[in-house]
Every structure is written in C-alpha cells, then in structure tokens.
Length: 161
Image 1: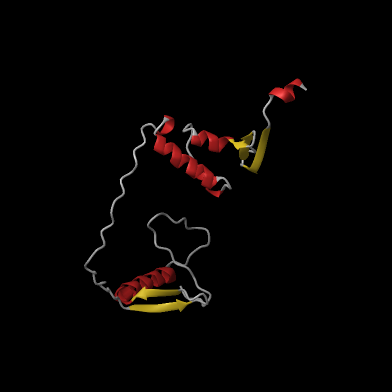
Image 2: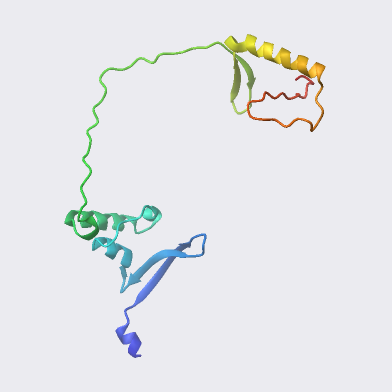
C-alpha cells in the first residue's frame, strides 16, 4: 500500500520487437510520453526510426521548440542556410545520338534486346573464330575452368553455338 502511494503510474506501450528480441515502444509516466518530454527539454533528438510512429508529429514539434530555445543538445545548433534555387533560363536542346541496332528479341513484358549494327562484323568474325575453335577442339564436359577475361560460348536449343 505504501509503494502504490509514492510510486508514479508507469505505462509501457510496446510497438514492435527487433531482431535481437528487444522491445521497441514508448514509456508513459503519469500519462506523459517520456520520449516527447525528453525532446521538449532538449535532452534528446528525434531519431529517424520514429517516422512511422504515431507520436512522430508531436516529437517533431517538440524538437522544433527545443531548437528555438538553443539549450542543451541544441546549444550549438545553427540553422542551415536555405539556398535559393535559380531556374535555368535557357533550355538546352537534347542532343540525340542515334545508333543503328538490330532487334534480336522482344519479350511478352515489352522488354527488348538489340545488337549494335556497327560492331556486327566484329561479332560475326569472333563467332566464326569460336565456331572454328569448337570444330577443331570439341569441348569435353567438366574439363574447362573459366577465368576472368575469358570468352565463353553456349550451345542454344537450336543446336547453334
């Protein structure tokens, strides 16, 4: 009976739990949110994780009031100067850089794949060299360990390399 008379009424509001099993929530003493009170008294700052909290607006307004007082944690606070955005008067014309390409595939999701036409001759020569290498030295499954910078080739379902 003596303890109930002198002890303040404390309420713990558990909002969630972190990965380590620690409770995340709010402590109310005599109906006052301790987090808001600490921020109002310039003894703490609002952490970004409070954004999803039901007390976020009251925390922000308490922090603004504490910043204006310039006490305790806000004693050396300097408001960041607001930079004026100057609109660009002259519109830069977009310079198009068109390159001829060959569309190789269009998917059902409307994604498309292309090959650069200008490098097509180089690609054909490379593929011809690789096909010649495969004809002369057919691959033995499991005998090749690729290294960085190596070219590799795959056999498609149509039997082409």
